Length: 405
Image 1: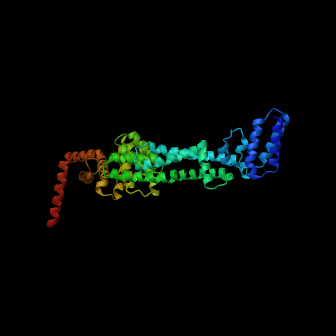
Image 2: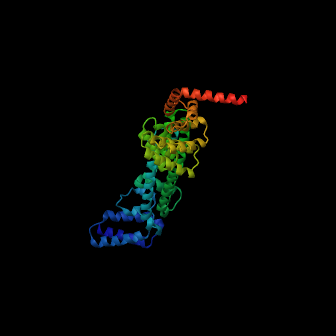
Image 3: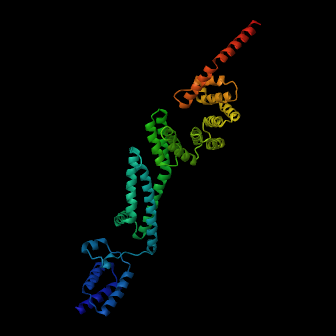
């Protein structure tokens, strides 16, 4: 037995010293036979260890077909040798970086998918969820599981990439995945959010508030920096939940959406918080210089005049409301400033008849504020009916007298 082992070791030594690729299989089988007959002889063990080091220096690549044929145990390491390239020294670094990049990509994918899970399904969200779920699985498997590593290695092998470039290729693949998901997250999601917002505005203008609300919610969930979607949600919430409306308006303000200053100011003035309302309205006026929001100047002036009226600062209110009238809105849209200016003139003991007349002509009872002002206008005419008729008759007489001349 000992003699046979020594003979096998000698053959092993010669096969290594005079290595011939055609004899690779014989070399591997011989090493397995040595292992099977290995005893506790110190001399034999030391010699085998030395020869094994020489064997490893050959830097051989053992074909997969050999392992499939003999199905060796994992402890028989010589069946699993792979060619070591000088670039392989950095494989550990590329592998660790790949893990980090894959993890970052998976994190972005999960964040993107979570946005669509929070909203009701539609065709677009279903397609995005499906594609991103597949990418997320690939990213997680590619970085964390042996199965994922095997899939990548099989791909690289089929592409004909040399083994010593596999780890570098894995890093490149992970970076490509991260770039794709970041581009989608930073550019496609805002564009999709803008699309939902546009659709919501169409529904809002048609009076379909439920459908509009759904679109605005989708837009905001997909991109929480979408100031316009937040503003539109605030508009809808004003009639449902003022606290929610204020929350959305503040989000819109944080993203620089100037019209939210006006709406916040209006809510606060109607809630009696006049000083805070003034702050938002004046800030809105300052921001107007850098914006191009149609009709916003009128609404800011109208609401600021309303605040001054409630504060009893009638001269200031009159000046601001007259400025609002000069902005040039059609009477129907600009009727609120006329109704408010009429109240200011009453308090200043000036004649408000012209303003109340416009208020009655163009205000709408469908608007709660304007409905109240219509009532005030009618009360004014009821209380001053005699004076109005007297003034009218005097004017008529003066006109007739001038005609006779």
